Amino acid sequence: MKAGSVLALWLALFVAGCASISPTPPTAVHQPMSARPVASAPVVVANGAIFQQDSNRPLFEDRRARRVGDVLTINLVERTSAQKSANSSASRSSALSGGIAGTTKLPLGALNGLSAEAGVDSEFTGAGAAAANNVFTGTITVTVVDVLANGNLLVSGEKMLAINQGNEYIRFSGVVNATTITGANTVQSTQVADARIEYRGSGFIDEHNTMGWLQRFFGAILPF
Image 1 (cartoon, rainbow, N blue to C red):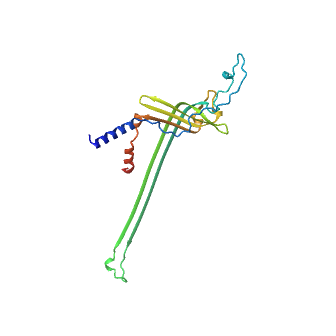
Image 2 (tube, one colour):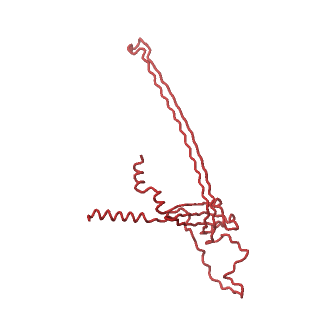
Image 3 (cartoon, rainbow, N blue to C red):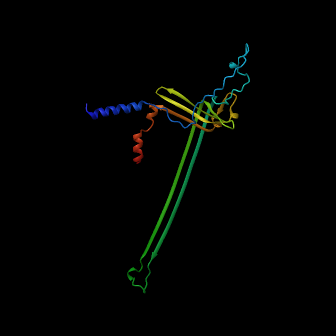
């Protein structure tokens, strides 16, 4: 087998191997997307015959997220709508005329009666319109990764769904005011500040819906 054929075969195998790899898509949400609470120093307690400090959970304790490592459920109820239209028009016209009358002082007898006229007309009309409607609903449970000085909670989290030949990623991060958390430990996504919501996919289906790097290269240098 010729060296060129071997090189082509190895190149084809390399490209096929790269195509089979589906890396996790990048994200723009706050990092990290999970956090563990800081371990506290062990305290020796005097347990009774029935009461055990380690397994005690107060009946009236607030179960809402408030510390690093606590979880919080976000109800995604995003709905946006935008519409824009514009119209413009402009016009301009001009005219110019001139002539040479008979005269006896200048030797212009051959030009007597000559006249000239010129005119310019310009007109422009433009119109444009754009509209967008987006709906994103669902739920995702995130982790408190930081507690700010004013008591607000910085939350971040990810949900991955493996569906047949691909993976779907739902990511969320933002700043939650603790007073907006309900008794069921949930909050609406519309009440979260600096919210970053992502829905991305990976796998061969998503790859086939994306323009290849070579096509993007020729599209950049040959835009016509």
